[in-house]
Image (tube, rainbow, N blue to C red; front, side):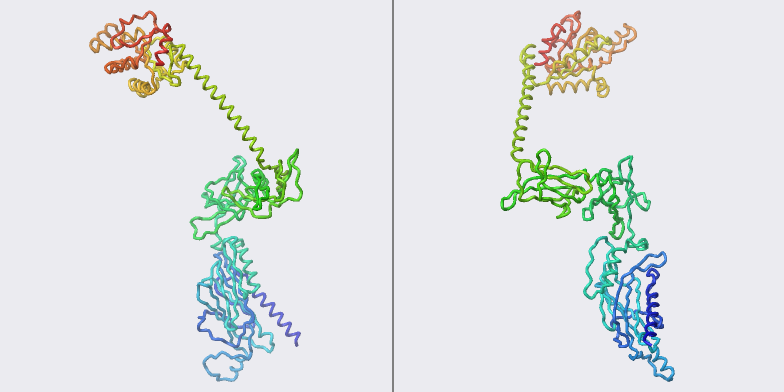
Length: 631
């Protein structure tokens, strides 16, 4: 009889397991799961204040779970799954239906199959307790094993429960209390521990859910898990990494770059990353700035790339210096910085021909704390104590994955630094002496030249000369003017020749251009030199007549007018300015005359506008002319 009862219990238990093993994704609303010998198993909401304790059902164990409920292709939601192990007392009170038993047969049937119920409640810190009353009819048999059962209540979209909530579940009667944590969606967010009343199964389920909630195959059906993702493509032609949206969108979401999981994430506004800046620990965080949540997706696509490790090794830097402890003992201090945290060893050595290791001082890079500096580099600092800081003490570094060691890195010896500073100072002093000598040589050379050409000149002051051409079309005259300008330039004058400034004259006009040159003369010192020719004297005479009719008659007598020189307008403008300076009594201080033709008429035949100005006959009076310009 006992074996038969045990066999029946095992079969029923297997059937219950099959029932309990239903896929959670099939639930879209509240459900209750009961074993087959509990008929009419239903659940309904009930207020916690109206629940009365009953003695016909005893809850022996309570095991709440948090799972995802999905249905077809709809969005998934949180479900609260509550498993309760109950004992049904066959001799317990029978539920009063509100009327007397009229027939003995009906009375015995209801006694054999009595109705019973159990109530499960849940609450959070932000909500009042909410309860589900599970009511069922017991198919009573003589076997005492059927007085034990396991029921499951599935509550879809429980009120007040969200990701990160702490939920308290309890039953009435029996007043068993359990606590379950709904994991947070934020990657890596630390979760609080369950209270002592939390069952082991609940803790395991919660931790499993935390690790798989947004890495689950159905994550796209969970609204909270929908975050933008990034795809990186290496472009070998441009030596860049192109950042693309994984969903094919042309616009990128918000992106930041992070080195190591605990590093700062710096905002990145470009669609490419230089290939030389890519490291093995580089990760991208992506989020939608317009989303209601702040969830981010994270990818580290270069962790196993050879070139990314080479970029890390090429950017390792080590500095070494000596320090002092509080008790005045010397120590060797080292600092290593790299884009990523490294594995390896550091040790001191004596540098003679090669760097010989000092035994017993090796330190592991994985020990201690790495810190990220303001430039985004990861730094590790260490010291070697009780070591002889003699001349030639250095540090070697071995990095895991590199074929060769880094170093030696040596600290600057104080005596050696002093000698280096002394040598540098002597070199600077020698350079300054040579420079001063060159400057004095140039000064003396200018002074001697000035003395040979008529006396002392204001050394260091560069005079300006404006050289004005005569209104001739003859190429020989124009070439002579240009040669004179080149001569003045070679003697240290700042020279402006009208033939060299045709573009400025066309833009400004002859008179404004000449006026601006004279203003520069007033600021820098110098003279305006007017080159005379036969045509220049004729045009000066014409200018003095100031009679248009006479000019017209003279033009008709000569027949068809000849094409004028491009410099005639500047020459005529100079006559206007000379006349104005003559009225102010300063024409002789600003203008000089130069005659390049030895057969030109004497000073008595010079036209009235040019009379009174100093005239030099070149090349016979070249020295006197240069001396006059330097005064």
